[in-house]
Image 1 (cartoon, each protein chain N blue to C red):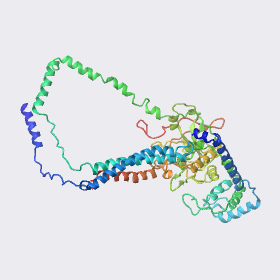
Image 2: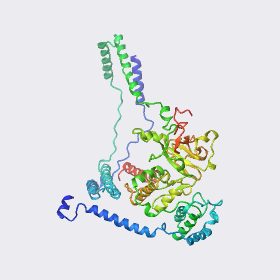
Image 3: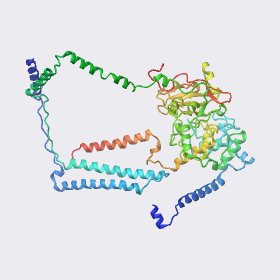
Image 4: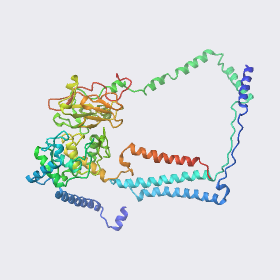
Length: 343
Length: 261
Protein backbone atom coordinates (compact mmCIF):
# COMPACT_ATOMS: atom_id res chain seq x y z
CA UNK A 1 0.00 0.00 0.00
CA UNK A 2 2.63 2.45 1.09
CA UNK A 3 4.88 1.32 -1.71
CA UNK A 4 2.23 1.91 -4.32
CA UNK A 5 1.58 5.40 -3.03
CA UNK A 6 5.21 6.45 -3.10
CA UNK A 7 5.53 4.92 -6.54
CA UNK A 8 2.61 7.00 -7.78
CA UNK A 9 4.10 10.10 -6.18
CA UNK A 10 7.44 9.37 -7.80
CA UNK A 11 5.76 8.93 -11.17
CA UNK A 12 3.84 12.15 -10.99
CA UNK A 13 6.86 14.10 -9.78
CA UNK A 14 8.97 12.72 -12.58
CA UNK A 15 6.32 13.89 -15.07
CA UNK A 16 6.50 17.41 -13.66
CA UNK A 17 10.26 17.62 -13.57
CA UNK A 18 10.88 16.35 -17.10
CA UNK A 19 13.24 18.82 -18.78
CA UNK A 20 11.71 20.94 -21.55
CA UNK A 21 12.81 20.00 -25.04
CA UNK A 22 12.60 23.59 -26.11
CA UNK A 23 14.53 26.29 -24.32
CA UNK A 24 12.38 28.96 -22.70
CA UNK A 25 13.14 32.00 -24.84
CA UNK A 26 12.17 34.36 -22.00
CA UNK A 27 10.45 37.70 -22.51
CA UNK A 28 11.03 40.06 -25.34
CA UNK A 29 12.82 43.21 -24.19
CA UNK A 30 10.28 45.55 -22.64
CA UNK A 31 8.43 47.66 -25.17
CA UNK A 32 8.88 51.31 -24.32
CA UNK A 33 5.86 53.45 -25.02
CA UNK A 34 6.03 57.10 -25.94
CA UNK A 35 4.54 57.90 -22.54
CA UNK A 36 7.42 56.01 -20.86
CA UNK A 37 10.06 57.94 -22.72
CA UNK A 38 8.70 61.46 -22.89
CA UNK A 39 7.27 63.15 -19.79
CA UNK A 40 5.50 65.60 -22.10
CA UNK A 41 3.66 62.77 -23.85
CA UNK A 42 2.86 61.25 -20.46
CA UNK A 43 1.18 64.39 -19.17
CA UNK A 44 -0.44 64.82 -22.61
CA UNK A 45 -2.05 61.39 -22.33
CA UNK A 46 -3.15 62.18 -18.79
CA UNK A 47 -4.76 65.39 -20.01
CA UNK A 48 -6.43 63.62 -22.90
CA UNK A 49 -7.90 60.93 -20.67
CA UNK A 50 -9.22 63.45 -18.15
CA UNK A 51 -10.76 65.40 -21.04
CA UNK A 52 -12.53 62.18 -22.11
CA UNK A 53 -13.90 61.72 -18.59
CA UNK A 54 -15.05 65.36 -18.44
CA UNK A 55 -16.69 65.00 -21.87
CA UNK A 56 -18.42 61.85 -20.63
CA UNK A 57 -19.75 63.68 -17.58
CA UNK A 58 -20.95 66.58 -19.75
CA UNK A 59 -22.70 64.19 -22.14
CA UNK A 60 -24.47 62.42 -19.28
CA UNK A 61 -25.72 65.78 -17.99
CA UNK A 62 -26.62 66.73 -21.56
CA UNK A 63 -28.61 63.50 -22.00
CA UNK A 64 -30.66 64.54 -18.99
CA UNK A 65 -31.11 68.09 -20.28
CA UNK A 66 -32.01 66.93 -23.80
CA UNK A 67 -35.12 65.28 -22.35
CA UNK A 68 -36.37 68.80 -21.71
CA UNK A 69 -34.95 70.41 -24.85
CA UNK A 70 -36.68 67.79 -27.04
CA UNK A 71 -39.72 66.76 -24.98
CA UNK A 72 -42.03 64.01 -26.19
CA UNK A 73 -45.33 65.61 -27.16
CA UNK A 74 -48.10 62.99 -26.95
CA UNK A 75 -49.57 62.37 -30.39
CA UNK A 76 -46.63 63.83 -32.29
CA UNK A 77 -44.39 60.96 -33.36
CA UNK A 78 -41.78 63.34 -34.75
CA UNK A 79 -40.98 64.59 -31.25
CA UNK A 80 -40.55 61.01 -30.00
CA UNK A 81 -38.10 60.43 -32.81
CA UNK A 82 -36.03 63.53 -31.96
CA UNK A 83 -36.10 62.73 -28.25
CA UNK A 84 -35.01 59.13 -28.83
CA UNK A 85 -32.26 60.15 -31.19
CA UNK A 86 -30.62 62.94 -29.16
CA UNK A 87 -31.00 61.37 -25.71
CA UNK A 88 -29.78 58.02 -27.05
CA UNK A 89 -26.80 59.54 -28.85
CA UNK A 90 -25.77 61.53 -25.77
CA UNK A 91 -25.99 58.49 -23.46
CA UNK A 92 -24.12 56.30 -25.94
CA UNK A 93 -21.37 58.84 -26.59
CA UNK A 94 -21.01 59.49 -22.84
CA UNK A 95 -20.58 55.80 -22.08
CA UNK A 96 -18.19 55.39 -25.02
CA UNK A 97 -16.01 58.29 -23.80
CA UNK A 98 -15.92 56.73 -20.33
CA UNK A 99 -14.85 53.34 -21.70
CA UNK A 100 -12.30 54.74 -24.17
CA UNK A 101 -10.79 56.84 -21.38
CA UNK A 102 -10.48 53.87 -19.02
CA UNK A 103 -8.89 51.63 -21.65
CA UNK A 104 -6.56 54.41 -22.82
CA UNK A 105 -5.49 54.96 -19.18
CA UNK A 106 -4.65 51.29 -18.73
CA UNK A 107 -2.81 51.02 -22.02
CA UNK A 108 -0.76 54.19 -22.05
CA UNK A 109 -0.14 55.14 -18.39
CA UNK A 110 -0.29 52.02 -16.19
CA UNK A 111 3.07 50.16 -16.28
CA UNK A 112 3.54 47.99 -19.32
CA UNK A 113 6.15 45.38 -18.36
CA UNK A 114 5.44 41.64 -18.60
CA UNK A 115 5.36 39.43 -15.53
CA UNK A 116 4.97 35.72 -14.81
CA UNK A 117 2.88 34.13 -12.12
CA UNK A 118 4.19 30.62 -11.39
CA UNK A 119 1.78 27.72 -11.27
CA UNK A 120 1.89 25.59 -8.12
CA UNK A 121 1.45 21.83 -7.75
CA UNK A 122 -1.83 20.69 -6.27
CA UNK A 123 -0.44 17.78 -4.17
CA UNK A 124 -0.43 18.49 -0.41
CA UNK A 125 2.62 17.79 1.79
CA UNK A 126 3.00 14.29 3.29
CA UNK A 127 2.30 15.76 6.70
CA UNK A 128 -1.04 17.26 5.59
CA UNK A 129 -2.07 14.05 3.84
CA UNK A 130 -1.20 11.95 6.87
CA UNK A 131 -3.28 14.23 9.09
CA UNK A 132 -6.25 13.97 6.75
CA UNK A 133 -6.17 10.17 6.91
CA UNK A 134 -5.98 10.42 10.70
CA UNK A 135 -9.09 12.63 10.81
CA UNK A 136 -11.08 10.15 8.71
CA UNK A 137 -10.03 7.22 10.85
CA UNK A 138 -10.89 9.11 14.02
CA UNK A 139 -14.33 10.05 12.68
CA UNK A 140 -15.01 6.46 11.70
CA UNK A 141 -14.03 5.26 15.19
CA UNK A 142 -16.20 7.83 16.96
CA UNK A 143 -19.32 7.47 14.76
CA UNK A 144 -19.03 3.72 14.22
CA UNK A 145 -19.71 4.18 10.49
CA UNK A 146 -18.25 0.81 9.54
CA UNK A 147 -19.20 -0.92 12.83
CA UNK A 148 -22.90 0.06 13.15
CA UNK A 149 -24.04 -1.26 9.75
CA UNK A 150 -27.81 -1.10 10.35
CA UNK A 151 -27.58 2.53 11.35
CA UNK A 152 -25.45 3.40 8.33
CA UNK A 153 -27.61 1.55 5.83
CA UNK A 154 -30.84 3.01 7.17
CA UNK A 155 -29.33 6.52 6.74
CA UNK A 156 -28.37 5.74 3.15
CA UNK A 157 -31.88 4.42 2.55
CA UNK A 158 -33.46 7.60 3.94
CA UNK A 159 -31.25 9.79 1.72
CA UNK A 160 -32.12 7.75 -1.37
CA UNK A 161 -35.85 8.08 -0.59
CA UNK A 162 -35.66 11.83 0.03
CA UNK A 163 -35.83 13.01 -3.67
CA UNK A 164 -38.84 10.81 -4.50
CA UNK A 165 -41.42 13.63 -4.01
CA UNK A 166 -39.59 15.78 -6.60
CA UNK A 167 -40.57 13.33 -9.31
CA UNK A 168 -44.19 14.44 -8.90
CA UNK A 169 -43.16 18.08 -8.48
CA UNK A 170 -41.08 18.19 -11.67
CA UNK A 171 -43.75 16.26 -13.57
CA UNK A 172 -45.62 19.57 -13.65
CA UNK A 173 -42.98 20.98 -15.98
CA UNK A 174 -44.14 18.59 -18.71
CA UNK A 175 -47.10 19.65 -20.92
CA UNK A 176 -50.38 19.40 -19.00
CA UNK A 177 -52.19 17.68 -21.85
CA UNK A 178 -51.09 15.13 -24.33
CA UNK A 179 -49.84 16.96 -27.46
CA UNK A 180 -52.29 14.97 -29.58
CA UNK A 181 -55.20 16.47 -27.62
CA UNK A 182 -53.87 20.04 -27.83
CA UNK A 183 -52.51 20.11 -31.38
CA UNK A 184 -54.73 17.56 -33.09
CA UNK A 185 -57.98 19.52 -32.87
CA UNK A 186 -59.22 23.08 -33.44
CA UNK A 187 -62.39 24.95 -32.53
CA UNK A 188 -64.05 24.15 -35.87
CA UNK A 189 -67.09 21.92 -35.49
CA UNK A 190 -70.05 20.96 -37.62
CA UNK A 191 -72.21 24.04 -38.21
CA UNK A 192 -69.75 26.68 -36.86
CA UNK A 193 -70.01 29.79 -39.00
CA UNK A 194 -67.02 31.32 -40.80
CA UNK A 195 -66.55 34.91 -39.63
CA UNK A 196 -64.34 37.86 -40.57
CA UNK A 197 -61.04 38.33 -38.78
CA UNK A 198 -61.03 40.68 -36.86
CA UNK A 199 -64.66 41.89 -37.11
CA UNK A 200 -66.41 38.60 -36.31
CA UNK A 201 -69.15 39.19 -38.90
CA UNK A 202 -70.44 35.91 -40.43
CA UNK A 203 -69.73 35.51 -44.15
CA UNK A 204 -72.37 34.65 -46.74
CA UNK A 205 -71.36 32.53 -49.69
CA UNK A 206 -72.77 35.19 -52.02
CA UNK A 207 -70.33 37.75 -50.61
CA UNK A 208 -67.26 35.78 -51.65
CA UNK A 209 -66.70 37.06 -55.18
CA UNK A 210 -64.28 35.39 -57.57
CA UNK A 211 -60.69 36.38 -56.81
CA UNK A 212 -61.49 37.26 -53.21
CA UNK A 213 -59.41 36.22 -50.22
CA UNK A 214 -61.10 36.36 -46.80
CA UNK A 215 -59.29 36.00 -43.50
CA UNK A 216 -61.51 33.85 -41.34
CA UNK A 217 -61.86 32.75 -37.71
CA UNK A 218 -64.55 30.43 -36.28
CA UNK A 219 -67.59 32.10 -34.74
CA UNK A 220 -67.38 30.02 -31.56
CA UNK A 221 -64.10 31.54 -30.36
CA UNK A 222 -65.26 35.18 -30.58
CA UNK A 223 -66.65 35.19 -27.05
CA UNK A 224 -63.61 33.52 -25.48
CA UNK A 225 -61.99 35.61 -22.76
CA UNK A 226 -59.15 33.19 -22.09
CA UNK A 227 -57.04 31.36 -24.64
CA UNK A 228 -58.54 33.28 -27.61
CA UNK A 229 -55.17 33.75 -29.31
CA UNK A 230 -54.21 30.09 -28.79
CA UNK A 231 -57.43 28.98 -30.46
CA UNK A 232 -57.14 31.55 -33.24
CA UNK A 233 -53.56 30.46 -33.90
CA UNK A 234 -54.81 26.95 -34.66
CA UNK A 235 -58.13 27.72 -36.32
CA UNK A 236 -57.19 30.62 -38.65
CA UNK A 237 -58.43 29.94 -42.17
CA UNK A 238 -58.01 31.57 -45.57
CA UNK A 239 -61.15 31.55 -47.70
CA UNK A 240 -60.82 31.94 -51.47
CA UNK A 241 -63.13 31.67 -54.47
CA UNK A 242 -61.69 30.29 -57.68
CA UNK A 243 -63.36 30.00 -61.08
CA UNK A 244 -64.80 26.46 -61.16
CA UNK A 245 -62.88 25.67 -64.36
CA UNK A 246 -59.56 26.32 -62.60
CA UNK A 247 -60.28 24.22 -59.52
CA UNK A 248 -59.10 20.58 -59.70
CA UNK A 249 -60.71 18.60 -56.92
CA UNK A 250 -60.27 14.98 -55.93
CA UNK A 251 -63.48 12.94 -56.18
CA UNK A 252 -63.69 12.32 -52.42
CA UNK A 253 -63.18 16.02 -51.61
CA UNK A 254 -65.62 17.57 -54.13
CA UNK A 255 -68.14 18.07 -51.33
CA UNK A 256 -65.65 19.99 -49.18
CA UNK A 257 -65.95 23.20 -51.23
CA UNK A 258 -68.99 25.27 -52.12
CA UNK A 259 -69.35 26.62 -55.67
CA UNK A 260 -65.60 27.24 -56.04
CA UNK A 261 -65.23 28.58 -52.49
CA UNK A 262 -62.45 26.75 -50.66
CA UNK A 263 -61.14 27.14 -47.10
CA UNK A 264 -57.62 26.16 -46.14
CA UNK A 265 -55.71 26.35 -42.86
CA UNK A 266 -53.54 29.45 -42.73
CA UNK A 267 -50.88 27.72 -40.61
CA UNK A 268 -47.90 26.56 -42.65
CA UNK A 269 -47.12 22.85 -42.35
CA UNK A 270 -43.41 23.68 -42.21
CA UNK A 271 -42.96 25.71 -39.00
CA UNK A 272 -46.36 27.34 -38.57
CA UNK A 273 -46.09 30.83 -40.10
CA UNK A 274 -49.37 32.28 -41.39
CA UNK A 275 -49.56 31.52 -45.12
CA UNK A 276 -51.69 34.20 -46.69
CA UNK A 277 -49.81 35.64 -49.65
CA UNK A 278 -52.46 34.62 -52.17
CA UNK A 279 -52.03 35.34 -55.86
CA UNK A 280 -55.46 35.38 -57.44
CA UNK A 281 -54.35 34.67 -61.03
CA UNK A 282 -51.83 31.87 -60.43
CA UNK A 283 -53.72 30.58 -57.35
CA UNK A 284 -50.40 30.22 -55.56
CA UNK A 285 -50.10 30.70 -51.81
CA UNK A 286 -46.69 31.79 -50.59
CA UNK A 287 -45.39 31.46 -47.05
CA UNK A 288 -43.34 34.56 -46.27
CA UNK A 289 -41.03 32.83 -43.78
CA UNK A 290 -39.33 30.15 -45.90
CA UNK A 291 -40.93 30.59 -49.34
CA UNK A 292 -42.98 27.39 -49.38
CA UNK A 293 -45.56 27.61 -52.16
CA UNK A 294 -48.91 25.89 -52.23
CA UNK A 295 -51.19 25.46 -55.25
CA UNK A 296 -54.73 26.29 -54.17
CA UNK A 297 -56.22 24.89 -57.37
CA UNK A 298 -54.76 21.43 -56.52
CA UNK A 299 -55.71 21.04 -52.84
CA UNK A 300 -52.82 23.26 -51.75
CA UNK A 301 -50.17 20.81 -52.90
CA UNK A 302 -46.62 21.92 -52.10
CA UNK A 303 -45.01 23.13 -55.32
CA UNK A 304 -41.89 24.74 -53.85
CA UNK A 305 -40.01 25.09 -50.60
CA UNK A 306 -39.46 23.18 -47.38
CA UNK A 307 -43.07 22.39 -46.39
CA UNK A 308 -43.65 18.62 -46.35
CA UNK A 309 -47.46 18.43 -46.52
CA UNK A 310 -50.28 20.29 -48.24
CA UNK A 311 -52.22 22.80 -46.13
CA UNK A 312 -55.19 21.03 -44.44
CA UNK A 313 -58.55 21.84 -46.06
CA UNK A 314 -61.56 22.78 -43.95
CA UNK A 315 -64.73 21.14 -45.34
CA UNK A 316 -67.39 23.87 -45.71
CA UNK A 317 -70.98 24.22 -46.82
CA UNK A 318 -73.80 26.76 -46.40
CA UNK A 319 -76.53 26.79 -43.77
CA UNK A 320 -80.21 27.58 -44.32
CA UNK A 321 -79.59 31.34 -44.18
CA UNK A 322 -76.81 31.25 -46.76
CA UNK A 323 -73.93 31.66 -44.34
CA UNK A 324 -70.79 29.60 -44.79
CA UNK A 325 -70.37 26.96 -42.07
CA UNK A 326 -67.86 24.20 -41.37
CA UNK A 327 -68.88 20.61 -42.02
CA UNK A 328 -66.52 19.38 -39.29
CA UNK A 329 -63.12 20.07 -37.79
CA UNK A 330 -60.04 19.69 -39.99
CA UNK A 331 -59.61 16.02 -40.79
CA UNK A 332 -55.89 16.14 -39.96
CA UNK A 333 -53.81 18.16 -37.46
CA UNK A 334 -53.01 21.69 -38.69
CA UNK A 335 -49.56 23.23 -38.63
CA UNK A 336 -46.08 21.77 -38.39
CA UNK A 337 -45.19 18.18 -37.53
CA UNK A 338 -44.61 16.95 -33.99
CA UNK A 339 -43.44 13.60 -32.60
CA UNK A 340 -46.87 12.24 -31.80
CA UNK A 341 -48.40 13.17 -35.17
CA UNK A 342 -49.42 10.04 -37.05
CA UNK A 343 -47.67 11.03 -40.28
CA UNK B 1 -46.04 76.19 -17.39
CA UNK B 2 -49.18 77.51 -15.75
CA UNK B 3 -47.16 80.08 -13.79
CA UNK B 4 -45.79 81.71 -16.94
CA UNK B 5 -49.21 81.67 -18.57
CA UNK B 6 -50.84 83.38 -15.61
CA UNK B 7 -48.15 86.03 -15.34
CA UNK B 8 -48.02 86.96 -18.99
CA UNK B 9 -51.75 86.48 -19.51
CA UNK B 10 -51.21 86.26 -23.20
CA UNK B 11 -52.83 82.90 -23.83
CA UNK B 12 -56.17 81.55 -22.75
CA UNK B 13 -56.07 77.88 -21.63
CA UNK B 14 -58.53 76.98 -24.39
CA UNK B 15 -56.59 78.83 -27.09
CA UNK B 16 -54.72 75.73 -28.29
CA UNK B 17 -58.00 73.86 -28.72
CA UNK B 18 -59.49 76.79 -30.59
CA UNK B 19 -56.39 76.95 -32.76
CA UNK B 20 -56.67 73.25 -33.64
CA UNK B 21 -60.38 73.60 -34.46
CA UNK B 22 -59.73 76.62 -36.68
CA UNK B 23 -56.81 74.84 -38.33
CA UNK B 24 -58.90 71.76 -39.03
CA UNK B 25 -61.70 73.85 -40.53
CA UNK B 26 -59.30 75.81 -42.72
CA UNK B 27 -57.37 72.78 -43.98
CA UNK B 28 -60.46 70.63 -44.38
CA UNK B 29 -62.32 73.40 -46.17
CA UNK B 30 -59.38 74.14 -48.42
CA UNK B 31 -58.98 70.47 -49.25
CA UNK B 32 -62.67 70.03 -49.96
CA UNK B 33 -62.63 73.12 -52.19
CA UNK B 34 -59.53 71.89 -53.98
CA UNK B 35 -60.68 68.31 -54.51
CA UNK B 36 -64.19 69.48 -55.37
CA UNK B 37 -62.85 71.31 -58.39
CA UNK B 38 -60.11 68.85 -59.30
CA UNK B 39 -62.06 65.61 -59.06
CA UNK B 40 -63.36 64.23 -62.27
CA UNK B 41 -65.73 61.87 -60.55
CA UNK B 42 -68.72 64.16 -60.64
CA UNK B 43 -68.14 65.25 -64.21
CA UNK B 44 -71.01 64.10 -66.37
CA UNK B 45 -70.21 61.50 -68.98
CA UNK B 46 -70.99 62.79 -72.44
CA UNK B 47 -71.30 60.93 -75.71
CA UNK B 48 -68.27 62.77 -77.08
CA UNK B 49 -66.21 61.68 -74.09
CA UNK B 50 -67.15 58.06 -74.73
CA UNK B 51 -66.30 58.46 -78.41
CA UNK B 52 -62.94 60.01 -77.51
CA UNK B 53 -62.32 57.13 -75.14
CA UNK B 54 -63.09 54.56 -77.80
CA UNK B 55 -60.69 56.28 -80.21
CA UNK B 56 -57.92 56.39 -77.60
CA UNK B 57 -58.58 52.76 -76.71
CA UNK B 58 -58.45 51.62 -80.33
CA UNK B 59 -55.09 53.26 -80.94
CA UNK B 60 -53.41 52.43 -77.60
CA UNK B 61 -54.98 49.39 -75.96
CA UNK B 62 -56.80 47.35 -78.60
CA UNK B 63 -53.68 45.46 -79.76
CA UNK B 64 -53.82 43.41 -76.55
CA UNK B 65 -57.35 43.88 -75.23
CA UNK B 66 -59.13 43.58 -78.59
CA UNK B 67 -60.95 46.23 -80.63
CA UNK B 68 -64.11 45.96 -78.57
CA UNK B 69 -62.26 45.17 -75.32
CA UNK B 70 -63.29 41.53 -75.61
CA UNK B 71 -59.77 40.37 -74.71
CA UNK B 72 -57.15 38.44 -76.70
CA UNK B 73 -54.46 35.93 -75.89
CA UNK B 74 -52.23 38.86 -74.93
CA UNK B 75 -54.63 40.63 -72.57
CA UNK B 76 -57.80 40.07 -70.57
CA UNK B 77 -61.30 41.22 -71.49
CA UNK B 78 -62.22 44.59 -70.03
CA UNK B 79 -65.98 44.15 -70.31
CA UNK B 80 -67.22 44.75 -66.78
CA UNK B 81 -63.83 45.98 -65.56
CA UNK B 82 -65.36 49.38 -64.89
CA UNK B 83 -64.00 52.93 -64.83
CA UNK B 84 -62.15 52.30 -61.55
CA UNK B 85 -59.88 49.63 -63.06
CA UNK B 86 -58.97 51.98 -65.93
CA UNK B 87 -58.26 54.81 -63.49
CA UNK B 88 -55.96 52.50 -61.49
CA UNK B 89 -54.12 50.79 -64.35
CA UNK B 90 -53.64 53.83 -66.59
CA UNK B 91 -53.62 56.49 -63.86
CA UNK B 92 -50.79 54.74 -61.97
CA UNK B 93 -48.78 54.25 -65.16
CA UNK B 94 -49.06 50.45 -65.22
CA UNK B 95 -50.97 50.43 -68.51
CA UNK B 96 -50.10 50.48 -71.33
CA UNK B 97 -47.53 47.83 -70.44
CA UNK B 98 -44.00 48.43 -71.70
CA UNK B 99 -43.45 44.72 -72.28
CA UNK B 100 -44.55 41.34 -71.12
CA UNK B 101 -43.10 40.19 -67.80
CA UNK B 102 -44.11 38.71 -64.48
CA UNK B 103 -45.92 41.91 -63.54
CA UNK B 104 -46.85 45.28 -65.06
CA UNK B 105 -44.46 47.88 -63.69
CA UNK B 106 -45.27 51.42 -62.65
CA UNK B 107 -44.03 53.97 -65.17
CA UNK B 108 -44.61 57.68 -65.71
CA UNK B 109 -48.28 58.14 -66.57
CA UNK B 110 -48.73 58.08 -70.37
CA UNK B 111 -52.03 59.97 -70.65
CA UNK B 112 -53.55 63.19 -69.34
CA UNK B 113 -56.34 62.94 -66.78
CA UNK B 114 -59.10 63.89 -69.34
CA UNK B 115 -57.81 61.13 -71.65
CA UNK B 116 -57.86 58.59 -68.82
CA UNK B 117 -61.36 59.72 -67.87
CA UNK B 118 -62.50 59.32 -71.50
CA UNK B 119 -61.15 55.74 -71.72
CA UNK B 120 -62.70 54.98 -68.32
CA UNK B 121 -66.05 56.30 -69.56
CA UNK B 122 -65.89 54.11 -72.65
CA UNK B 123 -64.97 50.95 -70.70
CA UNK B 124 -67.71 51.73 -68.17
CA UNK B 125 -70.21 52.11 -71.02
CA UNK B 126 -69.56 48.50 -72.17
CA UNK B 127 -70.91 46.87 -69.03
CA UNK B 128 -71.52 47.91 -65.41
CA UNK B 129 -68.38 47.88 -63.26
CA UNK B 130 -66.95 49.67 -60.25
CA UNK B 131 -66.85 53.45 -60.63
CA UNK B 132 -64.39 56.06 -59.40
CA UNK B 133 -65.25 57.39 -55.91
CA UNK B 134 -64.88 61.05 -55.03
CA UNK B 135 -61.70 61.94 -53.16
CA UNK B 136 -63.78 63.44 -50.37
CA UNK B 137 -65.48 60.10 -49.74
CA UNK B 138 -62.09 58.56 -48.98
CA UNK B 139 -61.16 61.08 -46.29
CA UNK B 140 -61.55 60.93 -42.53
CA UNK B 141 -61.00 57.25 -41.78
CA UNK B 142 -59.95 55.84 -38.41
CA UNK B 143 -56.23 55.07 -38.70
CA UNK B 144 -56.14 52.76 -35.65
CA UNK B 145 -58.89 50.51 -37.01
CA UNK B 146 -57.28 50.74 -40.43
CA UNK B 147 -53.99 49.51 -38.97
CA UNK B 148 -55.66 46.41 -37.54
CA UNK B 149 -57.43 45.68 -40.84
CA UNK B 150 -54.19 46.29 -42.70
CA UNK B 151 -52.30 43.84 -40.47
CA UNK B 152 -54.89 41.11 -41.10
CA UNK B 153 -55.65 41.65 -44.79
CA UNK B 154 -52.71 43.43 -46.39
CA UNK B 155 -49.54 43.22 -44.31
CA UNK B 156 -48.58 39.69 -45.28
CA UNK B 157 -47.79 40.86 -48.82
CA UNK B 158 -47.31 44.61 -48.51
CA UNK B 159 -45.34 44.53 -45.19
CA UNK B 160 -46.77 45.95 -41.97
CA UNK B 161 -45.21 49.35 -42.72
CA UNK B 162 -46.47 49.26 -46.32
CA UNK B 163 -42.92 48.82 -47.66
CA UNK B 164 -43.94 46.05 -50.08
CA UNK B 165 -42.37 42.63 -50.53
CA UNK B 166 -41.50 39.79 -52.88
CA UNK B 167 -43.99 37.23 -54.22
CA UNK B 168 -43.42 34.11 -56.31
CA UNK B 169 -41.61 33.86 -59.64
CA UNK B 170 -40.51 37.47 -59.99
CA UNK B 171 -43.78 39.07 -58.93
CA UNK B 172 -43.90 41.51 -56.06
CA UNK B 173 -46.30 43.48 -53.88
CA UNK B 174 -45.50 47.17 -54.45
CA UNK B 175 -44.74 49.57 -51.63
CA UNK B 176 -47.72 51.69 -50.61
CA UNK B 177 -46.07 54.97 -49.68
CA UNK B 178 -47.50 58.18 -51.13
CA UNK B 179 -50.16 56.48 -53.24
CA UNK B 180 -53.21 58.43 -54.36
CA UNK B 181 -56.12 57.39 -52.07
CA UNK B 182 -58.27 56.66 -55.17
CA UNK B 183 -55.65 54.16 -56.35
CA UNK B 184 -55.47 52.46 -52.93
CA UNK B 185 -59.25 52.15 -53.02
CA UNK B 186 -59.21 50.94 -56.62
CA UNK B 187 -56.60 48.26 -55.88
CA UNK B 188 -58.77 46.83 -53.11
CA UNK B 189 -61.96 46.87 -55.20
CA UNK B 190 -60.58 45.63 -58.53
CA UNK B 191 -57.75 43.31 -57.37
CA UNK B 192 -55.26 44.27 -60.09
CA UNK B 193 -53.01 41.51 -61.45
CA UNK B 194 -52.37 38.93 -58.71
CA UNK B 195 -53.77 40.94 -55.81
CA UNK B 196 -56.92 39.32 -54.40
CA UNK B 197 -60.17 41.26 -54.67
CA UNK B 198 -61.35 42.91 -51.45
CA UNK B 199 -64.95 43.65 -52.37
CA UNK B 200 -67.23 45.84 -50.28
CA UNK B 201 -68.68 42.67 -48.70
CA UNK B 202 -65.21 41.66 -47.52
CA UNK B 203 -63.79 45.03 -46.50
CA UNK B 204 -66.63 47.55 -46.23
CA UNK B 205 -66.26 51.03 -47.79
CA UNK B 206 -65.81 52.57 -44.35
CA UNK B 207 -63.13 49.98 -43.54
CA UNK B 208 -61.42 50.82 -46.82
CA UNK B 209 -61.42 54.46 -45.72
CA UNK B 210 -59.80 53.38 -42.43
CA UNK B 211 -57.06 51.50 -44.30
CA UNK B 212 -56.41 54.56 -46.47
CA UNK B 213 -56.21 56.68 -43.29
CA UNK B 214 -53.60 54.27 -41.88
CA UNK B 215 -51.48 54.44 -45.03
CA UNK B 216 -51.72 58.23 -45.07
CA UNK B 217 -50.72 58.24 -41.37
CA UNK B 218 -47.60 56.26 -42.30
CA UNK B 219 -46.83 58.78 -45.06
CA UNK B 220 -47.11 61.73 -42.74
CA UNK B 221 -45.45 60.39 -39.59
CA UNK B 222 -41.77 59.52 -39.43
CA UNK B 223 -40.53 56.31 -37.86
CA UNK B 224 -40.26 56.76 -34.09
CA UNK B 225 -37.02 54.81 -33.97
CA UNK B 226 -35.13 57.13 -36.30
CA UNK B 227 -33.61 55.56 -39.43
CA UNK B 228 -36.09 52.92 -40.56
CA UNK B 229 -33.73 51.43 -43.21
CA UNK B 230 -36.65 51.03 -45.60
CA UNK B 231 -38.75 49.08 -43.06
CA UNK B 232 -37.63 45.92 -44.84
CA UNK B 233 -37.07 43.99 -41.63
CA UNK B 234 -34.23 41.50 -41.25
CA UNK B 235 -32.72 42.12 -44.70
CA UNK B 236 -31.66 45.73 -44.36
CA UNK B 237 -31.35 45.64 -40.57
CA UNK B 238 -29.23 42.48 -40.68
CA UNK B 239 -27.00 44.01 -43.33
CA UNK B 240 -26.54 47.13 -41.20
CA UNK B 241 -25.73 45.11 -38.07
CA UNK B 242 -23.33 42.78 -39.85
CA UNK B 243 -21.39 45.49 -41.62
CA UNK B 244 -21.41 48.44 -39.22
CA UNK B 245 -22.07 46.97 -35.77
CA UNK B 246 -19.85 43.89 -36.10
CA UNK B 247 -17.26 45.94 -37.99
CA UNK B 248 -17.22 48.43 -35.11
CA UNK B 249 -16.89 45.62 -32.56
CA UNK B 250 -13.96 44.11 -34.49
CA UNK B 251 -12.24 47.50 -34.65
CA UNK B 252 -12.71 48.02 -30.89
CA UNK B 253 -11.38 44.53 -30.15
CA UNK B 254 -8.28 45.16 -32.23
CA UNK B 255 -7.71 48.45 -30.44
CA UNK B 256 -8.23 46.82 -27.00
CA UNK B 257 -5.59 44.14 -27.56
CA UNK B 258 -3.05 46.22 -29.50
CA UNK B 259 -0.03 47.49 -27.58
CA UNK B 260 0.12 51.19 -26.96
CA UNK B 261 2.84 52.85 -29.01
